[in-house]
Length: 88
Image 1 (cartoon, helix red, strand yellow):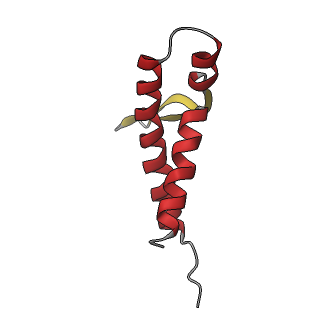
Image 2 (cartoon, helix red, strand yellow):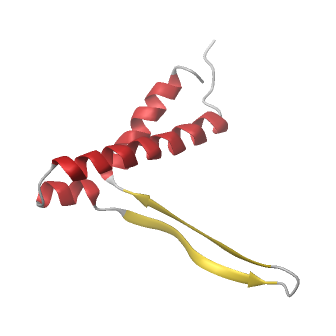
């Protein structure tokens, strides 16, 4: 009987994979010299919403998030999903 990949495990894989990718991106940034290869691996696409302030007179708060995804982060997400596949 094959188990299904649950949403919780998938979200954990994305978050942990993005964290692994960020760490690997920092290492790549330190190891590679400035140039095309370093730019290719570290150039990120920003997806999200800019911070918006909501003022309800009694309380005010700010909402917003940005998800920066680069090639190294994508590789980290794929590796984490592959590892989590055995535990889900």
